[in-house]
Length: 400
Image 1 (cartoon, one colour):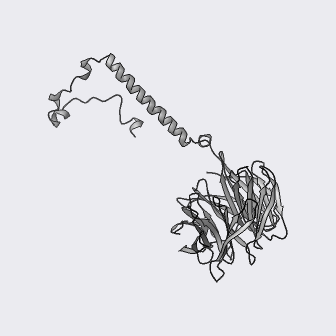
Image 2 (tube, rainbow, N blue to C red):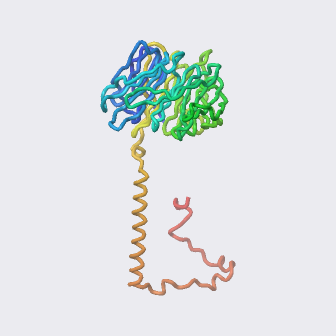
Image 3 (cartoon, helix red, strand yellow):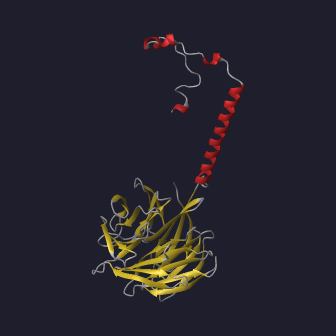
């Protein structure tokens, strides 16, 4: 395994807080403290559109909402002043225009977003523990379904994840490590609560939603079972600062790798099953923290992106090419078709062999019985002369 830095993307004037790839990885959205969202073309390595408004405050979190029946994409992002903004394309491939916005959390910043695609419902949460569920209309407006507060102590939230059946919204709390399961259909009533063995700085769920990664706000990252928050293992990233810095951590390469940021200009890549460090990527200067990371797998390569903090922040793109043997794996349908053809050939072959045997009976000399006198006892069998079979030997690789 070896990732190489292939590109640097410039455009942000301040710290980068969030990344999001669209469904096919052709577009990357980045948001930062400079009150910008930049949409990048990952084929051309260039910015295709910049969204900017000085009234937003920093852009804290970004989420793609998928593609509609006409091929149009939509994106939603949350800001430091509590606003949610929805941008969509008027037609496939066109520029993004604002469709709607709402003052979701007026008292503080938006910290997390999650989207229930089948129900077109968007969940948002704030740094003070407020959680809202919105219905996104076809026209792009936000209709509030319910709102609740996790606790009276202004418990901050750092992640939202819908359950597989979309019946529960799991809310990850920063300081206590609590994960609350809220009933989506009944006003956000709390149904279950679990607790992680660490604080929670950021959250990333695996593709199958059976595992989650969190920044433990201590010495690295922690992998938990979801939703029970049973501890699986830790991934160590020593801190270089006297204070704690929130860093993103994500799954990569079909959930076999863990990729996380740092406070010293490095991006750490771990093997998930063993927690072993497999590569440390250099983003920039040691004083530049890397808080935002993301990963995507294409047909011919794997990609990691990282964003730095501070003025004139940059995005680094790292790539690892795939060998031709792994670029186009056989689909399940292809394997089934080949298996069917083999079975059909065997069936026809057995019919032809039976017909041939009927028309051309073999001589009885081919079926002479074994010499039963030689096998009346085990001793007589052992006394028979040894003859090595030329077709099989212990040196034959097929027996290993």
